[in-house]
Amino acid sequence: MSNTTLKNQVAVVTGADSGIGKGIAIALAAAGAKVLVNYVHNQKSANEVLAQIEKAGGEAFVFQADVSQEPEVMKMFAAAKDKYGNIDILVNNAGLQKDAKLVDMTLDEWDKVISVNLTGQFLCAREAAREFIKKGVVEGVSKAAGKIICMSSVHEVIPWAGHVNYAASKGGISLMMKSMAQELAPHKIRVVGIGPGAIQTPINKEAWDTPEALNKLLELIPYGRIGKPEDIGNLAVWLASDQSDYITGTTIFMDGGMTLYPGFADNG
Ligand code: NAD
Image (tube, rainbow, N blue to C red; front, side, top):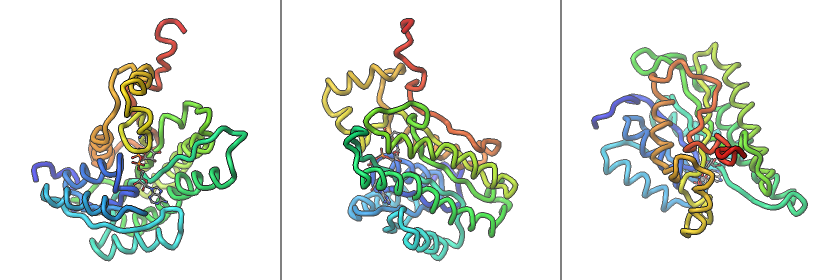
């Protein structure tokens, strides 16, 4: 393999059987990391990600866990440790939407999104941090004892009518990520966020699968194209690597300019 930026490092990627998580798992493996490919329902897709990684000469294994369930998260981290001996990188990616207008939103729809998107990230980050603190910095592997990458969204700053549960989960991730970064920096653990704009995945299929929908979406993207999982994969590799060793406690938006409020481009 030509790119060995993450050689001898182990990464846990949640929700890695689809979309952005899949792109990240493949990119981390291509950079030399050994990857736990987490899935919750779709084992077939997870195995396809594994096959793609192995075909490219990388190393990975698949593991089923629901990130909102504490015992399953603990088993997942134990499995990564058993298999590879240590853990260096967590990509807290798993997430979902249950959209409804505020007045129609059920408590189940609220609870489900908060428990996967926010509580799931807390549970995984806690297990990763426990492991990183125990391990400390390993010379020759990485300058940091560990890296935690939290998948946020442009909706950690852009309000989103019809999605109050999702926007609340991403706003929550922002301050959870910063608070964890503050607490963990003395342990040489970096915690960062990625704020994707519109990335072409199953989660937002209705926003890009017809030319009319895509044109409407592109009005929100000054750079004029929808993002790809590979875009986010490249950023995740960089954020996990020592090249970004001085970055902690901030969200990097990767959104083709969606957070530039394009509605104001012609004077509002
Ligand atoms: P996706 O639907 O393709 O992938 C989501 C993944 O999360 C799937 O693999 C799914 O199985 C997994 N998942 C859901 N619930 C889970 C659970 N309880 N335990 C473990 N895994 C679970 O969507 P995506 O676009 O790839 O989304 C990935 C992340 O990126 C999410 O956190 C999402 O909020 C975020 N995001 C996506 C976009 C976008 O435009 N696609 C933009 C901003 C943020």
